[in-house]
Image (cartoon, rainbow, N blue to C red; front, side, top):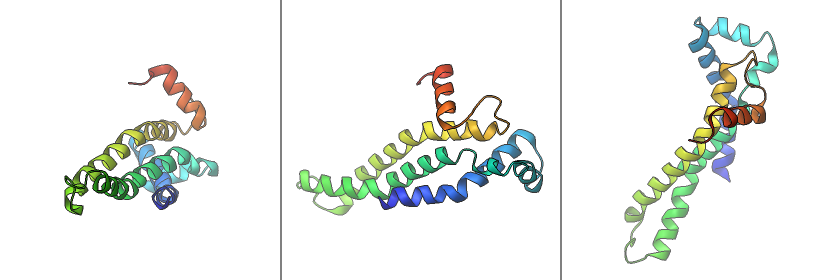
Length: 140
């Protein structure tokens, strides 16, 4: 739970910064120029926040919350193989990393599409963007 809360909270900072960065990548210009354009419609600063918050929640959960649970489970279930924390730490970290990587990518893709289309020409809200991506590309 703490990992999810910490990740979601980090989205409050990360999402606007990533929005500015993506707009700079698309249009060039400095931070002040892009921020000024974004803030012409103040609600734009929240564009992509839901996707960022979910991504960060899952990522943080994957690297902070999953490994201790897996490590403990390995040590309890297979005590002869994993008789020390060190022996269980590597597979626990790998599983946490896989969890974080695979589950966060779809949300990052949705967020990035939304933040790249601040004009809302192709992508609407979070659900609309997810639906459009699924209908255009499917799951690969």
